[in-house]
Image (cartoon, helix red, strand yellow):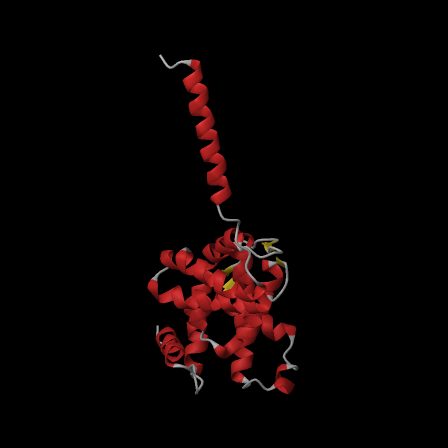
Length: 216
């Protein structure tokens, strides 16, 4: 049987060790705003990227980079507000297959943002303020694809694009989208005849990524 005196001594030593251990524990690291992109991309590489199919890993990473660019220094990110902005900036610079990859994996991407954005150790932390359902995401993507058909066929001519009516957009939209679902076979039938021209001057990894995706 342990005597009280020995127990008290043992307990005191344990308490001292715990105090010393706590003192040695480093304080939580705070990163600069300039490190935000790299930090979030590393987190993507350690988490979501490992769960994705090999053919979409690069697409989702580049999609994330575009979100970081659009989000800028905003402390709160709204999926409802930012998704259309991100897609508008991408428009026809990427083939229709990219949009399908994002639609198929957006739920996982959104969960990644919800979990990881608030965990980035900035002095003023960021947070996701809302989420979109799969149907809402499909509606936004379908709307951008409808716009892309006119951008592609009109060669980006702003004067001609300004003359496109809402009725024309809806006609194209309804040709491949119905009740929050996208018929990707019909999307293929619209865009494949137009072809996809890979811009010149790209680095080899980007060129290879676009070639592989556009030929799928």
